[in-house]
Length: 171
Image (cartoon, rainbow, N blue to C red; front, side, top):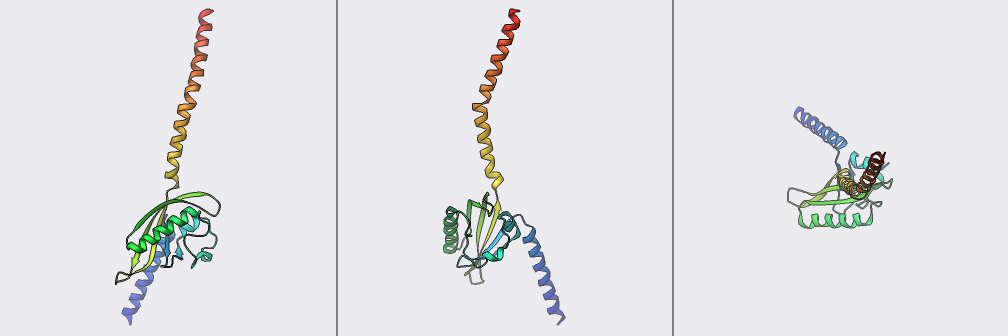
């Protein structure tokens, strides 16, 4: 009896640790059933997507209803590929949160199988890569400014300096 109690305590401890990992991870972790319905989403995803009550979306089709149609069709194809191949599939795409903000996510769709090798569900682990996707836009903007505005500004400064030198020389 003491042995069973020790095992139950150990299981409880492991469950608490796993929940703490999920609650504090920057990755959005989701469990999707074989019918492509959302069964679980971790705190990171709930917060990024600005979802007040995630339970409204449990047992509902994934991708979620407010995602852009392009994301929904691509993610559905990735989930299907994962199911058909029983291999991890990588998916990267923008989504829109409940506030209308565009976020980029890099997702790994992992088939979770039973001891016989049959897929039981999908684990989808997504990382918010929005800030990395915005860097190329910043670089393009800086290049645009550098090639379009800086030469004009420098030309105006040099013209003004030449005029000032000419005025000083003639005095």
